[in-house]
Length: 210
Image (cartoon, rainbow, N blue to C red; front, side):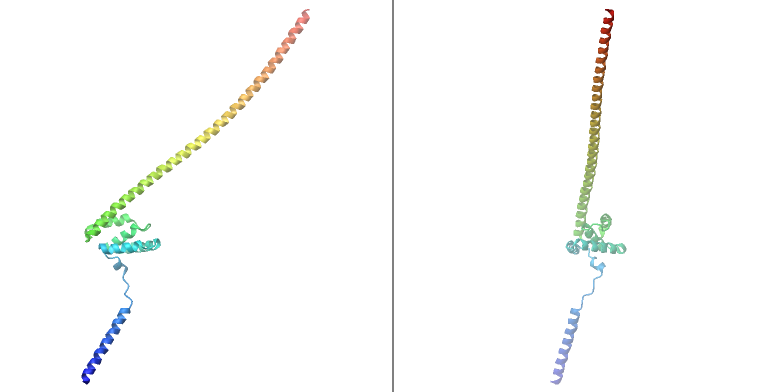
């Protein structure tokens, strides 16, 4: 009886000790996940999960994480990191060259085992190319519009200059016409005086004859 009680006590003690150890391990903080491991997933589920979480971040947090991915990619060049970087660059400006990342993934497409990821990359590349084409087209239209506006302003300045010169010419012409009228008036007055003098001379001559 005594041995049975001792065995039961030992069992309970062992169980309680095991619970204490299990509880201690359960409450222990989880070990931090290395950054490389966090971005190592290459399947569609891991990438979609990352894409959803990344899209929910504010712009400044996106940029910080994208730059972190960019720095991690420099020495490692793993496929998982490249895939995560590509997704981050799709939603972030001023974070490396997405064309370079896309070109690397295209060259390593045979390494991607998940067919869904290959289809997704093909779709994203086509969409990115279309958007870039629209952006380039908009830039070209903006340049043409800017050039047209510059030409219109130039023509407007030329028209204003021409109108100003025409007004000056008209003013000069009016001044010339006024001078001409004055000269004509002076000439007429002089002619009248000469006619009067001739008339006087003729009258004087006639008087002498008598």
